[in-house]
Figure 1: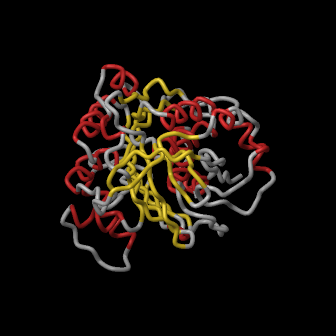
Figure 2 (figure 1 turned 90 degrees about the vertical axis):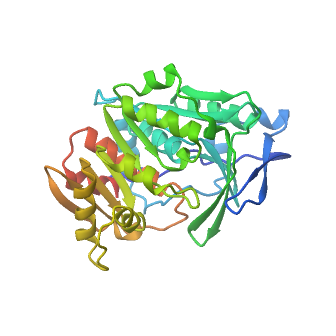
Length: 350
């Protein structure tokens, strides 16, 4: 059976007391991010069962309901059937949507979904010494995730914050800079958490030299590298993206990032021939597997020794697409680590 694990990392938003800290968006303009959430009275309600909070939206796609899915989710969470450890590293942040603040960041989203599938994941990031940072710990620990790799910035840099603007179901992002995750340090504990693990990371958290060094150290210690390019303009470094894409165990790109990567490699781009472009890019990078997601049109997956498969996707009601790629990656990664063949693994992720 197909498993649509695309729930939000945390479906209830936060009510904020505005006490702003400041950072710059992608246009260099100053943004304000609330640094204190909830009154002491309201804080007591954070531990209430989820049913007592209004459903104000989701962070990604949702499918037409399949009653069997609840039983599947409960079953797969019961035990981790593969011995391979997963460590995710990168941005932990709050997405400010019209419905409120939602905990997010691609690595944290992936870890949450892996946990839902029964696979433990360690989260490495950095948060501010502020209430939003403490709430990151509370939320992730509440979901059973290992937060021992999350550093706390003592230099006054705030927890990551993103203003998300929706155009229908399509988001655009203003990412506050600097954020605490820009200052991750390559400590001995960080390297130990990554050593021998499947390390999942992207390009956004490498926009600062400090976090770039930390992620490079974690990637070097990994048994397998999973690189989700996840381009967020203007924080794009072509040389860095190519460097981390080369030789990785699994590379994930969307259908807009694929021609970008091909262009950075100096490859000829033939419009309309997506399969040929994917195969040429895959060969040039020398990675073990390459996955290209196509939004509503499904995805394709290439492997060195198992060839090429694709899936047309499923018809869904799109609420919004924030985090959809993260839930996809978690489901695909879990299936591949379980030894599932390419075609059913891709179907499960779609």
